[in-house]
Structure formats: C-alpha cells, structure tokens
Length: 71
Image 1 (cartoon, rainbow, N blue to C red):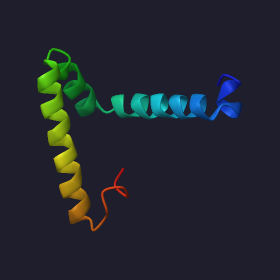
Image 2 (image 1 turned 45 degrees about the horizontal axis):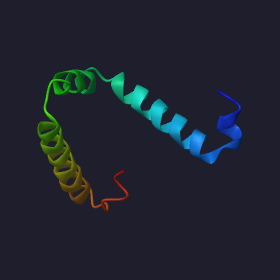
Image 3 (image 1 turned 180 degrees about the vertical axis):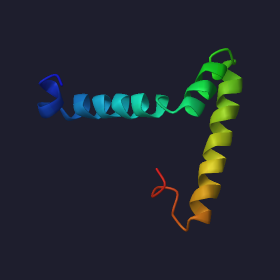
Image 4 (image 1 turned 120 degrees about the horizontal axis):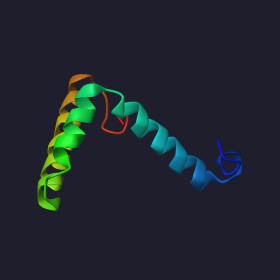
C-alpha cells in the first residue's frame, strides 16, 4: 500500500474501491459480463446499470434488507 492509504481518506477510499473491483473481477461470471459490456453504447450501459439496480433492490427486499443495507 502507498503511504497515502493510511493518511489520506480520499486516497484510501479510492484504493478500497479498486480492491473491491479487483475482487469482483475474480468471479468468472462478473468478468464475462464486464467484457461483454465493453462494446455497448453509453445508453446501453445506462440500461444495464438500471437493470442491475432494480435487481439489487428486489433481492434486498426479498432478504428483508433496506436498499442501503444491501450495498
């Protein structure tokens, strides 16, 4: 870790987000979806993002969680 990780909240948050992304990309299904999305238009990516948000909300309700608890 760079020293800024320990002293700069913004830098540490950015590094934590990058680590989370790297962890997600280890999942083969997630990686395949990401690779397929590369060729989509910005509008297509917005549509996919909206669909993912809707599915997350539905799954959170099923689990009895609020939207923020499922993040």
